[in-house]
Length: 266
Image (cartoon, one colour):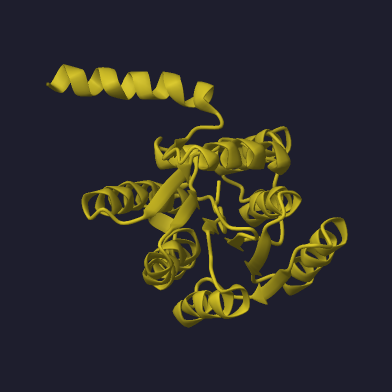
C-alpha cells in the first residue's frame, strides 16, 4: 500500500461513521493521521481513542467546515507541514436530506453540494500539486450506490453522488493520460451503520417522504459496520482498484435494467 516507513492519511468526515472506521483501520496499520470534521467534540474524542489504541502513531485533529473553501484548502498546508507527506486523501464527509425535488431551496442544495461534492473538488485542487511533487499519492472518494442509481425524494444527495462518481472517473483518466504518479478510487457503498440519517428530520406529514425516511433509518441501522466497510475499501486501495462496490449485489439488478434500456436505444 505504500513504500514509506510511516505513511500519512488525511481523512475528512473523520469524527464518526465511515471516516472514523477508515481512520481506525489505518491507525491499526501504523499510519499517521490528519482527521478533519466540523464536529469538534466527536473529532477530538476520535483522535484520543485512536491515540490510545495506537500510541506509536501521530494523530492531528483539525476542526474544519468543509463548506468553506479556505478551510478545505488549508488542510493540505497543515498536513504537509505536520507530516512532510500525504499518501492518501480519503474524502468521507457526507450529508443526506430528503424531500420533494422542487421544494429544496438553493441554500439546501448549496449546503449539501458543498460538503458532498465541492469539498472533494477543493481538496483535490489543494492536495494534487503537492502529491505530484512528492512523486505519489492516492485519492479515495466515498460516494454511494446513489451515485449510480436514481433515488426519488433524495435529489440533492443523488445529484451530488453522481457528480462525485463522474468527477472521480475524469480525474483518474486525466492522471493516466498525463502519466501522473497518482491514483484514484471511488467507493459506492450501500447501507452502512452510520449517523448520516440524523439529518432526515422529523415527520413531514407526507406519507411518501416519511415512509422513505423510516425505511432509510432502518436500512442504515442494519447495514454493514464502518469497520467492515473500511476493510473492503483498504483492500481495494492496496490493489489500486478504481471501482469499489461493497454492496455489488444491490447494484447489479438495477444496472442490468439500465443496460437493457440503453441497448434497446442502440
